[in-house]
Amino acid sequence: MSDFDIVGPEAIRDGVATDAYFERTEATLRHAGKNPRVVAEVTADQFPDGEFELFAGVKDAAELLSGRDIDVDAVPEGTLFDGGPVMRIEGDYLEFARLETSLLGFLSHASGCATAALEARSAAPDSTVLSFGARHVHPAIAAMVERSALVAGLDGFSHVAAGEILGKEASGTMPHALLIAFGRGHQAEAFRAFDEAVAEDVPRVALCDTYGDETEEVLQAVEALGDDLDSVRLDTTSSRRGDFRHIVREVRWVLDARGHEDVGIFVSGGLGPAELRHLRDVVEGFGVGGYISNANPVDFALDIVEVDGEPAAKRGKLSGVKEVYRTADGGHHVGLRGRPGPTDGESLLEPLIRDGEVVSEFDFDIDAAATRAREDAESVGFGEE
Image (cartoon, rainbow, N blue to C red; front, side, top):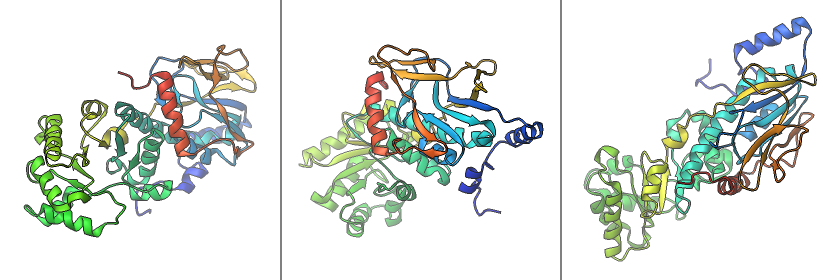
């Protein structure tokens, strides 16, 4: 028995992390001597409906599908999609049948988190926005959440182990627990101890709402750290928050009146796009947690659309192999492969795997994906109010 309730990488890669009916499907097809050559497509919606979502999870999907005798095309990570396939698999069905469960899990969950993160990013495009939501999910998927946030263009994240996996350094300063450990009335002592203990390159961001009025604790932080204070953070629980914007403006006033215009204000705690829009002109940065990590997965499905060269599909799905396009006006279009696409349309599906090998041209770089997401969001008007 495993120490934790975690399905390991080997089970995922070997196809054991699957729904039972795929094992029975394999047994039935092998018994009948059938293994048709198929084309299968991953889709969320058949036709565009104007509701764009951000594609993520491609790196893990490629790792899962590599080494199989199949060809795969995919929309690059960080691309917004609206109907039609985001991935296409061609090969003998038994080469990948039992991988469907894990494949959809990789793509669905990451794309849901990335879409929510892009909504937050679009709500405060000129602010620092960090992902703080790892504590709301199973620790085994924390790196997926943080990678998805970075793909959407967020500026950083909080989870240390995820940072080691992604090759990025985690961000963070102090929790309320640190202030409570020093005790009521000793906030300044806690601020000074933090300043003495942590590395010089860690920003001095003081959490200023543990016991007293936010403005009072901000003044304690200023007195304790002086010019070394970079920012203050307000994480006031919603039940005591009142008019949060008014509180932030009071804090800004108190800082400015004492000559600390360069001290920033950072806010966190139950924030989503609406709150970011409401506060973005009075704060420098945000920590967004559950809105990203608790996002609903995108409802992807994997459907066979061609069998042995002939169009095929279950009821309610579109048969035939498809292409998806982006036009200059930001439109998303779906059409049959081999037919003319939109006049100014750019095909979005690119080769990902050929004969089981991941093609070197496919880019898994997080920063490149974030750039793509930003440019695509501008093109299609994502997040506009």
